[in-house]
Length: 284
Image 1 (cartoon, rainbow, N blue to C red):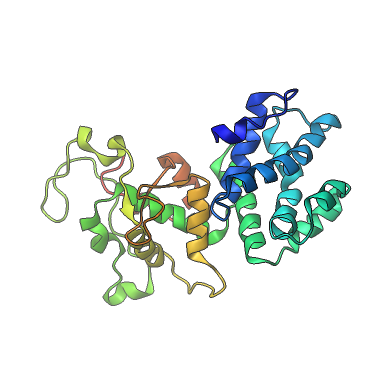
Image 2: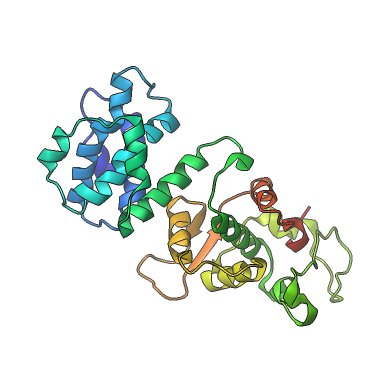
């Protein structure tokens, strides 16, 4: 990031440029490990990102608006420039697309990288809104976040109690659990002291396999075969809703932790009619 920041034009505001560089890095770095390639993308896309400011359409402080206006160019860069369907010279000569035509282009992305990027952009735009209830996150992504939150704050030993579906519970969600406020739980064990509550200690890392087990348990209906769950997890990590705690070069036993708060996840859960508090252990 420090090297990319050095490419800031001398007449440009450095914090504004760094904010743009962070967006480019988050979107492209997983598929592009070449620093020179990333610098190339920054140099070609920054003028598109800056153009609404020069045209008086937006201010430098309006990051959300600027990102929405630049969204079609990011998609096109993945499908054409990054995949070398057009040259850099051809890209710089392309006239800015109108908002209507840009929307059409953004909605017709078909390559794998383009679809992944479009999904990322949709999430990032959603995440810039002020309230979790206003987010337009994909349906399964909401449940993945819920599963990640439960995995971060519930003890693994209680997964069987909360999420196992046996006997008659194969046909409906398990309704056990609930917030604990002290005393003895149903297993006869003493509930932890308030100052040891995981809610106060913060999220714990969990294996991705455990999160997926919870996810498939709290989803009642069959999942569409076209949905790439692992791609959505990768996108959530890129967006920092999930933090990967194991090294990037480690392919097995990947661990993450959830980065969203209790009130945030309650609003997300409310949007899919999931009573998350019923599944949380020792929460207030």
